[in-house]
Image 1 (cartoon, rainbow, N blue to C red):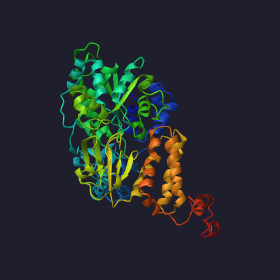
Image 2 (spheres, rainbow, N blue to C red):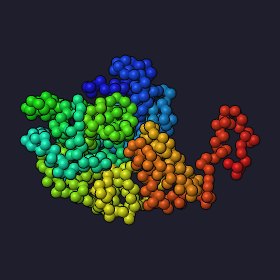
Image 3 (cartoon, one colour):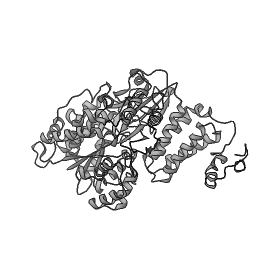
Image 4 (cartoon, rainbow, N blue to C red):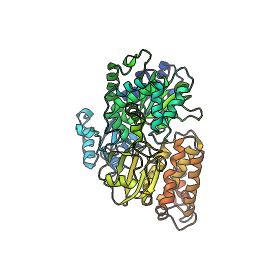
Length: 582
């Protein structure tokens, strides 16, 4: 497989060219790649960045994240722009000049309200900028003529630690690896006790060992750069500033497990980083650090390809990511077998995230003792955090494991804090009584998101936004998640508008437990976390919205009959229920 022939890339080019993907294009692509038409059609339908009807010449997607969303500045910027351009949200204007919709977090949480325009991030939105955008669009001004500062994505790094304070030259980790040998390097990784930085915390050394020992015609290394958890943006900085160390970590892993091919799976929202990553790969090939006979070792061949996703949060789950790599919808696989034995194309595959692979490079170069000198016995080394929300300095912070929540809040300038969401919506919602807890796998684990909410925030609104996020991002494969996340959102809808009764809180608890216990993959297992945490720590936020009745219907009967009245064109007084009967 080469980069330009990947199904997702071909479909992306068609989307860019025609602003949608037609049924004719689907058939042509299927013939070109010798794939079933049904598979290509399913891929187009699965990914959020592919459309079956034309988008506008200016296609605008506002982030709806709690930190970088269109309401983060206190004004509904999405509605403001749609009004100025006279376009309905979720539709394309009749002249096909512009289309506007919302999307999940785009990883710009340290840049205020943000959006994607034709796939390019535009940051630091406010009402004045919205006004200027509308003028530029109506004047049909090309994006390269817009103010460059609008598109400038800066890396706000406020605290450097074990990884960010260390410098490596390209090849340092590889040379140390070749000197130490395969087994010696693997032993060093195991002794470092490095655990996956994506949140699950599986032993990296053990994963490499299991893959190395698994039988297969080929072995693969995959970097999971599909950072999609709302509130997380540390990988964006690592991909921009530490791409060399990332590629080196993949190459070291390849040497240990015997892989000849690797992939970086880059999230679609970070497509703007693609030229930089391609240049890094090219440079490493010129240095003899990728390709054939790496560093003169005649039996050491390895190269890396990049596959860019197309807007699917679930592809951050490793088996869903592998499905996507194979040109299919990103639906998680049933496990076992696990990817280390049966991964990409059914072959043994290591999937590690960006931060993990960079840490492996440093460990290979500096040794396990250097790494274990920091952290806790069960959580060695450091953790990069993407801090956003109500604090003076949102950005990247690197801390040794064992740091307390309160210490972090003090350093980033957060005051009057009501709650902290650690690990994104799938993580843990904490109130003030838990701020003395430690960031560590054995206490509060995290993939890197650290969202802060002060006392002025409506915590129930935040929980409701998280529930809407999971209902939207569920891949729909299994009933507990597909139906359960919708029921959870609807239950919160009811409480939010003041129609919830006390039994609705009990129902939320019951459905949450069902979703968590019976769902197919990690998305469903964690989708109810914010609701369960909210019921436990912020029950007063729910109770304040409840009605005094023991039971209220989920819908208004008279309103539910509106569609029937429209169809029959019978909307007189007699077609309405009397007040009080609904």
